[in-house]
Length: 485
Ligand SMILES: *[C@@H]1O[C@H](CO)[C@@H](O)[C@H](O)[C@H]1NC(C)=O
Ligand SMILES: *[C@@H]1O[C@H](CO)[C@@H](O)[C@H](O)[C@H]1NC(C)=O
Image (cartoon, rainbow, N blue to C red; front, side):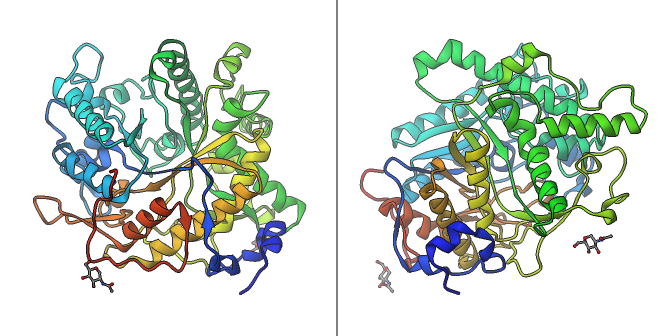
């Protein structure tokens, strides 16, 4: 397939089904000056040491009381044992030559009763040691304040009362469905309450930082939102509207209150949910309202648009959509159906199809919808079933980085790219069956031995050269730490 660059830019849909090599893949492409590369992990997925002074979080609780909800009946009790092996983790980051490391704080490790009365000194020491080790080698810490491991004690009080929550995706999957802890499955109600509280909690964390710590720390604070690309099946008005609605319900739900000029939930969400709620006999909308004061409080509370992106779906809306979703539910409110194309290459995770042009389109949509914000890609990556020769992962990273460069050339202000993940880890409901690591982790060995995959060598070269060269073939026999790291 050979498409000229301009035809790709004018019509990304030409790529449909052609996610393989593009003509432009022959040229070596440069990343912009000052562009930063990193990798990411999350506390429950890697730390292990689930007891050492730590209280129980919703993942400890769920995996211990209902082990069969996890595909391989596993849990994060030991995971990658990064609690003890963090020096090796930082050594791997030096091998890769990354600029920053995104990791999350486990509040049950820091607060030994899950409340703020008792601090677990061992937990504080762990994060201090990790941060010191990063700074020793000029690796900038990017701290996620919440990555799904809510203290169980707070969950017992209804969850989402913690004011330091700065990540998302908890709401639908954990509150409106059973695909993440705490598997409440309170469809069409709980996820909206969660969304509102999450936004208020995020805004509060932002404002505390902004007012009390920004001057002394010189850091940045923002929110990471998960977003797929929603492609209309056809160019019929119904499908086009369905795709636009999908974006507003999935991404706009959090992005509009923070990044739009007017704030609040997107108008289409407010209108559709209010209308459905009235039809269903609810005296008021299931979507909670913000007061004007709350709208102002939440609006503008992010220094950058953090985006976790992996894949795309096709959406459509016609008569056949009626009645396929539970009532009430989030998906009944959005009112459409979605699927992924058979011909799209797939990762080990069934939902993760390779659609780089979707990434390109999503970045353009964010640029146009929210006045061209600074974008940090906070997660992007590919799962396999394991093995060091991960050519599929290499291809995914190259194609997605190339699509990102297309979006940057069109004016999207992307500053930061974070590969998910540094190493294999506990992949939530999939346990250890799906592997996202640049480094393979041997879960049979007590040392949890970490070995670089081919993708680690390729990512290292991208970071070293600040270039994307599809023809580069690494020598994978020895991993070294380069000068300056
Ligand atoms: C709705 O669209 C889907 C997907 O294209 C199609 O399979 C189905 O036949 C359509 N149904 C109606 C009633 O138009
Ligand atoms: C790869 O590197 C090793 C160690 O430096 C070297 O012995 C080997 O010849 C290299 N292989 C290739 C194909 O260049």
